[in-house]
Structures are given as C-alpha cells and as structure tokens.
Image (tube, one colour):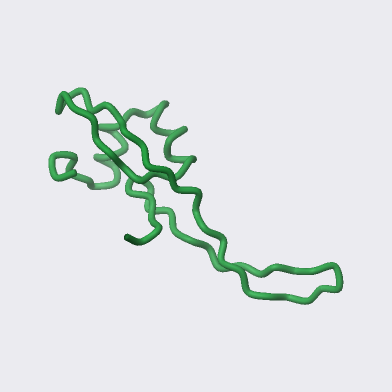
Length: 78
C-alpha cells in the first residue's frame, strides 16, 4: 500500500537536508499517516481509513461525509 492519505491525497515531499556547512543531500519527507476507525453515521458502522494527522484534525471539524464527498470516495466500498 502506498503512503497516501485516503481523504486528502497527501503524499511524500522531495526536499533537501542542508547541513551547517551547506552540504545538500536529497531527503524524502513522509506524511504522518495513522490508521483510524471513524464512525460513519449514515452507514451505521465504523470505517477504517489511513489518514494523515492533518486530515484527522480537519475530520473533526468538517465531518466524514463532507470530506469523503470532496475527495470523491465511496464509503460503501471501504
């Protein structure tokens, strides 16, 4: 499974690690992904999603149905 947030689509970011002497090395900044069981009221069940921590915070504000609709996810298939 790839390291992608299922609701926001966040992925790893390519960056540079720069030392004090300004030596630059390529670095991959991964997304902080967590497995989260979220209650889906319309389906009357829990849905297990792999979410970034930013998505979990946004989920508490917007709600699962609105975020899934914006992302184009069908919760019946999960």
